Length: 388
Ligand SMILES: *Cc1c(COP(=O)(O)O)cnc(C)c1O
Image 1 (cartoon, rainbow, N blue to C red):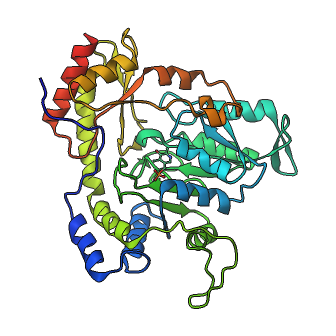
Image 2: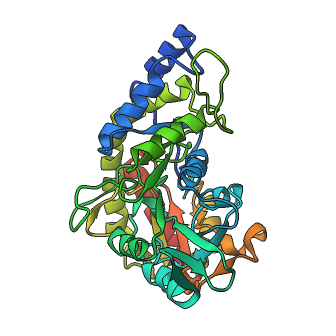
């Protein structure tokens, strides 16, 4: 039996991380200033082909700033997915706005049919704005989340957004490096299609700065304002002038030093994710009632997280988690629906049957960017043993 612990997803520092962090420490520029923040912003912006990127303290902070610059305020409603990490939705409440939960599609991403169903059945357009007839609220934005490195059906979602005049905030925290290969948005990276896009560099993401985030926008003045707000809205370099209520949402130079090194490894990481994903598909897909959920075929996905679907087995996600844990392999269930959690149990929602289906049946398996094929084989063999 396997004696070594195989983690789900941990940082991989095989590049210049120590070198750049030491450089930052030696320089004593560990907080604001020092050059790495600008370098990191520039390298990410160039990578996703955007003119500017704004580094933040976390992905959550980036999403909060995105909502603010989009003008989402008290009483507004924002369409969000029910099946995702709660950090995508909490910033809606920070802005004193209300989430409306919609279903996922078979890629676990925001379901355009579900969005449309909500808008058609519950909303009306007046003076170019969309209002919820049940609550009277202005439906201001939608927040597609590109779950596990997939990309939402952006052509459909952008068409809906145009029809109903909704701002589109892409939660691209799990999809740095994913881009669309064909169609209207061919060549566009996840996070660069809507009005604003946000990334995260938390410890389990495809690249990490310990904690951190980034915001990009197709509206240069929004990116500029996000930067301003992230640094306490200071309007004068020397004197303490602040022209609005800002936030301490900036990234530190120490974090950014890690980020610059991690960016250098991103494409290599995606290569490993891809290789291991293909291995799992070959060895698990269609066996013992298991499936490996696909990434959309019209995208180059970063293949951040691998999802095993317990399609035709009597084993539950708990059985899998426990069986894997006994073999020292870390796995995790997919998120509980946010709309079922205490803080959101009274929120509006559409039919969520797909989200419920996947919630009952999806388990994530090890996907670290230094996971060897030998380790992946241990994982696959154990899964087959449990589901025999
Ligand atoms: C990681 C993540 C976030 C937030 O990122 P942090 O950097 O941890 O604040 C937001 N949304 C989703 C879907 C995430 O996976």
